[in-house]
Length: 96
Image (cartoon, rainbow, N blue to C red):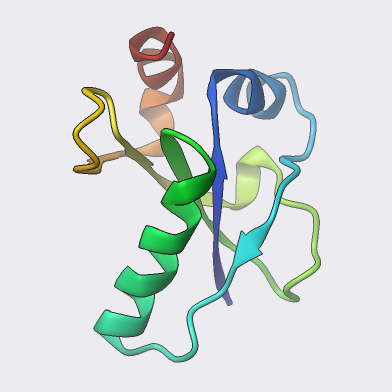
């Protein structure tokens, strides 16, 4: 099951340190592309970065090994750019 969590640089640093990400999880209503986009957009209200994670259950702890992608509003326009998990440190460096 895919979930989306909005976060900031502090949340990403916690993930990098091995801590679970906290915050409101947004799950899409279905696997439909529009529902996925709506969930991503809703999660973006909670921070400049949306973490996409694949979990077994909606309330599973979101740790770095479950993160599938990062979506980042690096320039404040609201447009989210996709980053791979391996780019986590670069994403942290982009944020204030």
